[in-house]
Length: 101
Length: 143
Image (cartoon, rainbow over all chains, first blue to last red; front, side, top):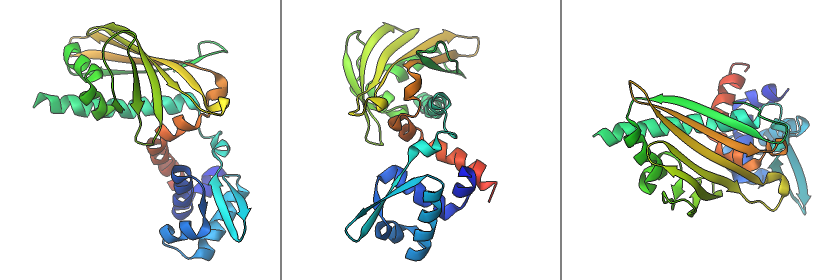
């Protein structure tokens, strides 16, 4: 369910934006999504159904935020930190190469 | 990567580096070099020195140097304070350098997570890029 929901590139991009930038309105998301507002709303609906986003109504605006807890089945903390260090070690090796010159 | 006890977790990453320990040590202990591969910092290789690591995602880690043995061992705390206790992180990072015939074996152990920290948000953010790259590969295959 989670993978299927995030398999769509546009939907995944919307979700990533919410993860990175925090709560956003449909309007803000549409401005950057490259698709129409109804399309963004539809994607948000699917994300909400999967438990990946939550909506909050404030006046006429609806604010959406990422629900990172929904990713728990995908993210194991220790493997995530291991991934973090592996990628840092890649940078470290690049640096050591440059230090040669 | 191992779970050492019910109370704490540790992450171990090891790599063979084709350079001698002395060179690797410089990259681990000189602030302008640390910044190039890890994060912005005000590190000093002095036991008891308190410093910050500033991630490009905006997070700031509170660190204190615990052990310095030139070209061999470097250890510091890796703590993240958050208003929500569930996101607090207290851990210790230890780098161990062992010379080999072709360079150095670098071992990093980060220990001290409690199981309830396994979804800590800052950690997730730190790993976002790689995580999403992996996710794209896995999820992309399904589309």
